[in-house]
Image (cartoon, rainbow, N blue to C red; front, side):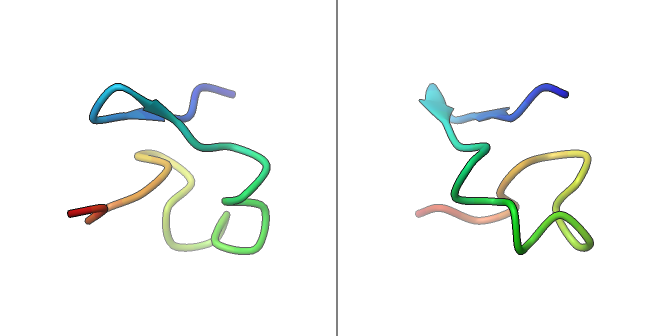
Amino acid sequence: RECYTQSVLICDFNEGLDNEYDSHGIEDIS
């Protein structure tokens, strides 16, 4: 799947957050 957010590739790190951020990867990375 695609895990691009704010020019940052976050997929492996988002393994555990797959439930909440499956569509966006990371909601808020500010």
